[in-house]
Image 1 (tube, one colour):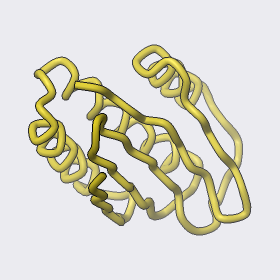
Image 2: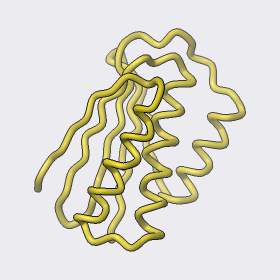
Image 3: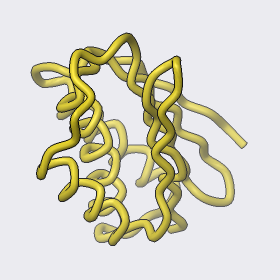
Length: 119
């Protein structure tokens, strides 16, 4: 299993860069266009949840093996902790595309785990 990680500020055009990176990894994993778009949406929505909840940076760990996996983690101390309607919509979208998604909140921050697709 190979690992690829990215750390980024949750601002500006960095989300576009992550979408392009995610698309490239999906291409390497042999995903079709629909599966690639679904995976990019899941990574982007995960980052948006973290951004809306006050995280200023995020770490993304991609794992490439029999499936392409991803863990998205918010870093630092979030400035707010309320979930709004946009977060509910993002979580519903992730659940619809992935089935089960784990949202972990601990002292180190928030992680969105089990973003796993099989091509």
